[in-house]
Length: 391
Ligand SMILES: Cc1cc2nc3c(=O)[nH]c(=O)nc-3n(C[C@H](O)[C@H](O)[C@H](O)COP(=O)(O)O)c2cc1C
Image (cartoon, rainbow, N blue to C red; front, top):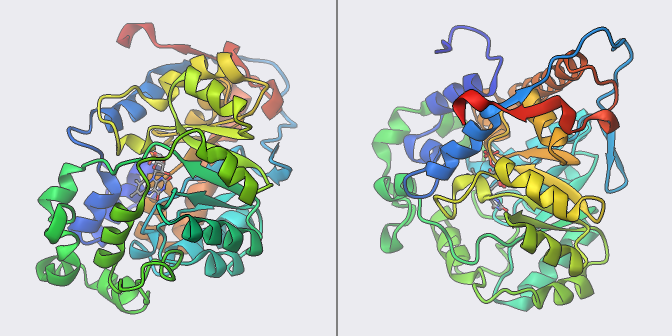
């Protein structure tokens, strides 16, 4: 178990720091998954079960981890997944993450349900900025969000499709963060939790204001607290969304359109048929349908179906540079991380997030060398296999 007196080096170290720093209900919201958290655990475990193949004497002195995605040059085949309410985990969390990701050379994807608006986030840095869209019942609000994203310089629109209804996370229920009238009650009455985390209270609770959800504030007229905004979002995300809506989105957005939350080869093909420029193989980090397969276990089948027709990304359980390499080996053009970037930012601030990204880079580069690969384009299925002993 890593101790807090040692310098953090890995995702699990930053997770521990975040656990120390955040009020319990916020850490649980970030860390938890749906129901019994079976899929949450599966996402990580299935990456661990993949075995890399060590290769030798291949002159790996001139390696490059660089790649190109949607026309942008990236330092590493990695992007930061959208995580709602990140601005409650660190002061102006989304703006800081966009600044760090941009300077490092990877895309940051902003959630619809973020504290910082797309305008504030865009102004905080440079580099590729993506915007994640939930289909809102009020199509006027939806069209306006897309227009604001375009005006802010967003390069990729990611439509999340695995949340027509919001999954239940029992940790949030236990913390009275979800469940009708009790929604986010902790934010108002979690005095013990606040008392135990004075650094968070000062840093985020006071200095990180305002705690409105910047993207949806213009449409959620009577909302003023995160509790109100959460309730608005739960009531406003449209469960009637279907394939037919993609044409409507296309009419509002001409740039690259990515569909996030695909877990079946048939749905992947359907997305391609509807003109998706990219697909994110994802189960929402195990926060929606508990019991569903891990993202990485579905990746090869989805790659077999649509590889070459669309950009392929994957998130859920990526915890190291080795995992990024494994994802690439199984057909992804890039991997994405959700919780890991928020753990680092919440646990150790801007410097922590930069250190975590550098750690991913170092791990990925060393793992390329030890699997005998010099270029991202050389990564293929020959460098990975399923660990037979644990299957
Ligand atoms: C606290 C939390 C909030 C999230 N909010 C969103 C969101 O607003 N929109 C979205 O598309 N995905 C959201 N996700 C899912 C992530 O984008 C991503 O798919 C998932 O975190 C990947 O798994 P990982 O955390 O194991 O990397 C959220 C995930 C977490 C942990």
